[in-house]
Every structure is written in structure tokens, then in C-alpha cells.
Length: 88
Image (cartoon, rainbow, N blue to C red):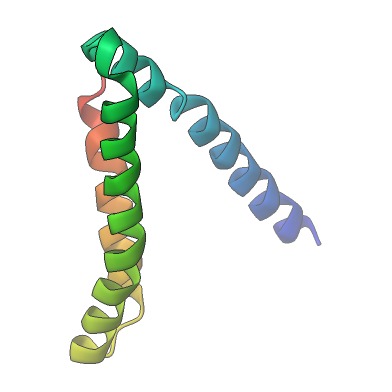
């Protein structure tokens, strides 16, 4: 039971942190060009939707070729941590 509480607390903390962090793209679009906020936001939304389409396909290809279910998770971890390390 204690393990479950620890895992849920950690996941909840990460979720709250990501929710607070991901408010900045809206502000970024406004800072880039106030007249094109809708266009910039739409392009950012399209990029996110493409990632949602190709992410599972990529994971499926990785698992099909290697038989290792852990590799897609490592890839996602690297993709999540890499931009965070450059955030200043």
C-alpha cells in the first residue's frame, strides 16, 4: 500500500509540474508576434497532434523490431528531459 501511495504521489507531482510548465507556450506565442497568436498557436497545436499520431506508431515499430517494451519509454524519457535541460 505504501508503494502505491508513493507512486501515485510522484505521478501526481509530475502531472502538476507539467501542467504548470505547459502554460508557457501560450505566452511564447504572444511574445513571438501578438498579431499572429492564433496562427502560431494553431501550428503548435498541429505539431502536438502529429506527435500524438506518430508517437504510438513509432513505439509500435520499435517494439516490433526489437521486441523490447522498455525502449519506447526510454525514448520518451529522453525526449521529455532533453528540452528541460536547455530551459533557462
